[in-house]
Length: 459
Image (cartoon, rainbow, N blue to C red; front, top):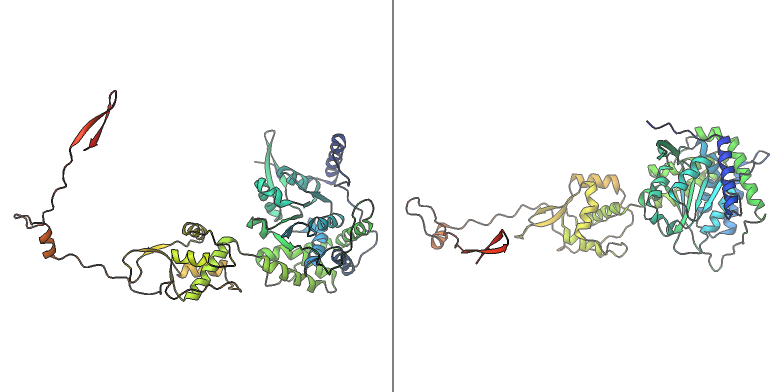
């Protein structure tokens, strides 16, 4: 049995940090800022609403952000100081369509606001769980789109650190199974989507954008002592969190109904912070959660396919549809990426839902066709995985393209008459049964195939 995972004490953490610093110094590693430095909390009590206002204004001054993004960044930065009493550690994902949209600058600001920040632009799987376990660092990983596909094992590590009871990995070291904790705050930044549904569901996705031609953005320098204001905000966030740590651990805030279960888990501690801070922040936090996380609870590709098939059934008022017609209708949808869809790929994506095509003859056809039926099981899967129709594309289906439901099966063809059989084959005079001719016999010759071998061949 492997030993129970035990978090490192403060003394052990300091020893590990000093050892890492010594290694960096001996190797000449480039560390312009100490990644393990932690600012002392603000010496005086802090007003929560004022602190959140100042942090949000800082993001708005230096970045062009959509509605709710600055408030989300503010609440998430403060929540990193309350990671000790959090059950969930939501991941942030800063995404943009192109480069130059402020993702790296946002991470740079977070390095001055978060608890024990550790910025990276490339990190190995082992470094992720070791850094989190030994230093309880807040990982700020940039350029995630450039290396995540090559480090597939890192996806499981990042996923595991979202939920505290399951945030452990095991490694065999010198014949002993050692446990490492992976629970910690993580912010990611990259271009496009993560293309990993499990990881995206654990993220609060923040869309970043470039500055518009009429927008005035204040330049920011976060190095060489020019970031004193940001560091002071980080110290104030640490002090306010320390003063309210017990209340945050016991908080059960009222969550917006628009969020899914995973979305409520992601936002729970952040909304609790907003409720304790007071002012307008309880409303601002819930508005941001609904605006960002409710739409971003995007359906996975199989769920999206299930929802689109549901729309096709609703449009056609039918309970049966040919697989070929279904695929053709899906590929003609202009706002979907179903262009390369095939009958086989549709079957593969629907199989986990227990939905499989059947082979039946349709009315007026002599050959059986492969089709899908909308039955009770199909409606149950719709209710579970794609309940809300939303405002998605409704395909224009021709009346003749989809078969009408609830029709009787075609009648089988009549058997051949005795007169017809009599003209084709003679009857046996003894039994009276129709005598079928024997198949013609073909002569067989032996063809040598080598020493001791041969094979028969029909002539």
